[in-house]
Image (cartoon, helix red, strand yellow):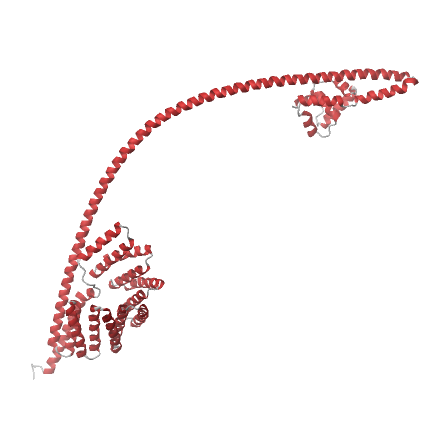
Length: 548
């Protein structure tokens, strides 16, 4: 009939309307609360922030670096749950720096996992991989099985959210292996939950149900109520998607009952939303709309409550920062006042010290100058006395040497005179004997010849010359020795000639002393000049007199 609808058409229209409403509230859920709830921790009040801030300040005062790192990480997580990712990143990076300086391996790895999660929720999944990989390396070094399980699980969850289910399933299997080895039931239950979620996305509902059920048993054995409610909701979703909305409804009711008992409003609104979907699948659209509306109201209530908590917490942070600024300013003023006071006292003390040192230094300088003057005076007198004594000693020594030299010269002159007289006598005897020989008398000729030979032999004896040499060396200590060393070809007779030349003896006396004729003396002088490498025009006497 025109203008009217059949019952089946009305039912279809109602079903489409409920579906649109469900889709609308699902989008609303995502835009308002889901993104926050997905990472939200149990409600954190401004009191908790103040506690963390006070702990951090106390740790800084006591230089407890590990405590500082833990407090910074906790505050970073708080900012993360509030959605202030910039502040969260700053605190986590500060904690990272401290953990690295302390070589706190497990704490550093846990902080890296927090950084990876932060990058993921800040829409930077590529940056999330580096912290996860480093955390894996650190946990492998320390052999922390539970840490490896958590990190593998987070990496697999990241792959799941990117739609890379094969990689996600692979990493969750690695996480499952480590969780089993660690013996941590909560970690194992979480991995089972991740595996169930992957299989649910791949529409493998029976396998998903199996892993969700294992996860539920693990949470129950550990007493984790909130996690139990979440997994029960997941079981209901899997059952409903598997074609049994009535069975899914039972799980949703069970989750709603536990959420009401524990006053977990987020889990309650999730259960109401699942119940609305199940009622819609059972074509009970009024009930579906009713539970969807209840879910929406809870979302708004949760959103308003969390906004109020965030505003209150941000106000607390602002007030705390404001007080800290005031305290820092007061401390700075106090420090400045103390510095100025100390500086003034130091300046006065320095001035007093400088004045004291200046006076003492002046006194010391005058005293030292007096001492130095006295020392110089004493030194001058001492040196003067020494110089006078030395001068007297030198004068006495010089007089003694002159006296000795004069004595030696006299001895040498006397000895030479004696030699000359001896040689003159011998010369007269020789001349007389030669006259006798020339008379040619046979009776005394032989005897006289022998006497002449003895006299001639006496001319060649060195006894007198040895005495002369000793006295000459005392007057001229090194002359003959140096001549002998420099001109080794000189004979003893030639050395005697040079000694007599040094004595300024005349040629006649020299010839008599050497027992040779003047002509022979000239020959000897020529031969000596040649050995001394003197030129024809050079004087032998001048050369010898230049020798010391």
